[in-house]
Image: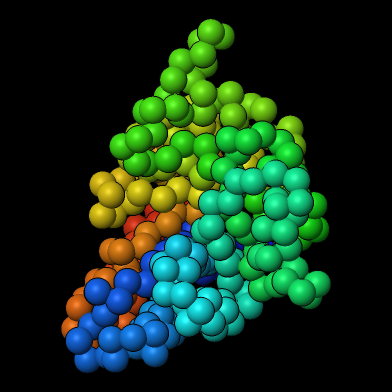
Length: 276
């Protein structure tokens, strides 16, 4: 999906909501089988219910990988469930070099040499350009580069001041944007520190920002929009648990749809600033 197509989808749905799919057997509604069959039905119903509101889905591969071979099968089945006109992100946080990076990129973008449904993969820049370039080599695909995360440990490295006065995450942004373009490189920047999110946007004014941390983690949608959403700078706001587990009862899909719809109604007031 191109940048123009993604922005067009945002306009069409009047949304910039990304729904995170983090399936946890321990949180399945009791009415469903407590196994991968139940997870498949749960995720299928969630995707079906939220499709009118979501412009993107982010599948967190760790939750599938932890289930072993059945989890890998489930991952591919759910990837096939996401509508083809919706942006699909594999949240895998890969970060290796050389042949390994090439194989990781191929695993998501061209498994067995065939084009994949996945539009973007999250990648860690810690090992430098040769850990990122293999992902950027696929036309029509995106690399979502970790820049500023919402977790407590972000202070350990990302917020270290360098001799030039910049934070490390700022140096990452300035360097990494030379590797790709706003048409194939987006940055992951957390919602919980809007003053830092504003600094991210100032350094990468045209790149799409994938913003997790709204909802359960404490990030605010209005704060994100004020800090990062501009006429030339789109955002994808990821909400996972607050949508996915909006209800633990039999109405889980309807509750997820209501929660997604409430976010989209709030987004409508900000979407008019987005241009192609």
